[in-house]
Length: 193
Ligand SMILES: [Fe+2]
Ligand SMILES: [Fe+2]
Image 1 (cartoon, rainbow, N blue to C red):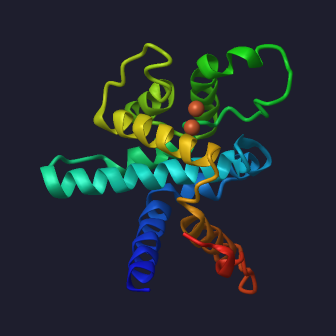
Image 2: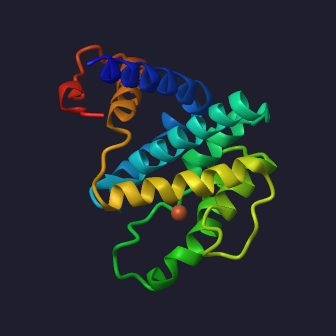
Image 3: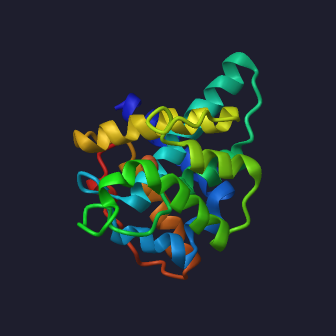
């Protein structure tokens, strides 16, 4: 029981930190549209990107604490939130989908550059997140962190292991409050993580 509450408190703090850095992106109609696309298993692109941003923040917090290495967490979160901003269903059979794994980082970066104001670190995170599948070496520590977090989340989602449902619940709750909806229950009791 104590472990359960400790985990919830950690997730609550991470959701707060993630929202403070990524609010502009999270609440935008463009990013909200990624709820309509499935990424892995039953996880939507929106949920996947929240999960990647969360694991990235966890890694960043731990290397800051243990190694004293500074991480640009705002860029880290924003880049993670936009790393799969390709805005289509990659499972459909449209032309070019067979090379989606190689082409989507560039498409996501062009879309993100069009819809948001990005810095060099955020662009590098998005463009290089498929390393080493794509041979473009990440140039910032934030980009390396996201490549690791992305692979970890993809694995968990593919094998249906829940690692982010409570954080996603907290983010959805914050979005609802921002929209003036005080009645919403996104199913906290169903969140098992
Ligand atoms: Fe990706
Ligand atoms: Fe991803």
